[in-house]
Length: 457
Image: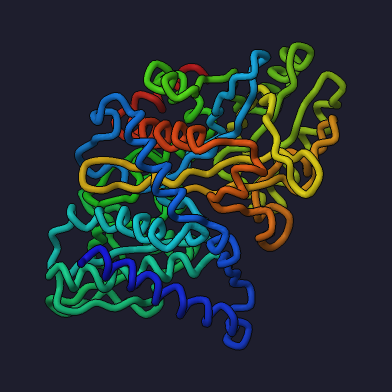
């Protein structure tokens, strides 16, 4: 009954938020975007069948079991490649932690499971007046996701008896004072939250009050103390952000976990890290005659600065263009280094609207008790068809990389999307299983993975 009620509450929240988004331009929120059309393209019956199949192919439940508060929610992005013998392999492009977005594009049941993954954080909070931060990017076009999550947290901390009452506010409305038995969810952007968060002793302090939990890796990784590795008594959605935020560290994690992932046809591929422009150019020069490459700036960039490299590429020109794109989007203060350089995947392409397109699959993973489970997925189709060359717009699949949010290129899990991408339910089950195993491995070993990546890079 509790599960039914939570799904019902999620459905009501979604319906209300769709109305708010529709009229957001009237109240100064014209940048908000709905992903309801993608959600409507999800077939939850197929997703649930794939989830069950994924659990059956995991040989040992210890591979998805963890204790402690290191990790609660995330996603893994895959591209499919095809061997000369015709076998399909699933290549991990990147991992995402507590800041992963787009989950309102999942079916209502899967969205509820994602929210429940965040709610697992509450088991590690004992404060009778909890303060929980939910951070989001500035001018977030998917702010609706964080509003749904904040409301779920607000109602849950009261229903669990953690406090008598709770409310959601912006940071400017918090003066550091709370009544006994009152809980608080602070929903605000990273740039507003960061200057106010101070590590003092063992706690993170906000306006003189201890913070119990932080959702949003963009807060932790940019914080001048947490971002450089200091630990505090605060529950993060993802203490593994030093791996999930860094593509090269993710590739090292795949390499270190290769024996566990091989059962799902996931194998490591060649990748390097560069800390300077000269390093970046030297690595590309060393390998561009032997293989096609992709250069990727540090952290998630939404496609900004991602560029293909082949033997004819004028390297310095393309590197300068890549850095210019990145800084135009994020500002001159944010460095694109260290860059990741990796081999270009021999992509297995979708047949979309009469042409071959590159695509990726984002698999969402949520915690339930002491285990991680894949709960759903989203297909993202490249803007332009593959033409045999290295046009960037035929390679980058991010839905928000070209101004606004291109809803048409987002596909849910359905018989139609499987036909378009030429995949089977077995293919997705392998990716679902691999996602849970990989993120569990990262949660258990993130410090070792990070040190390995720093040494190798």
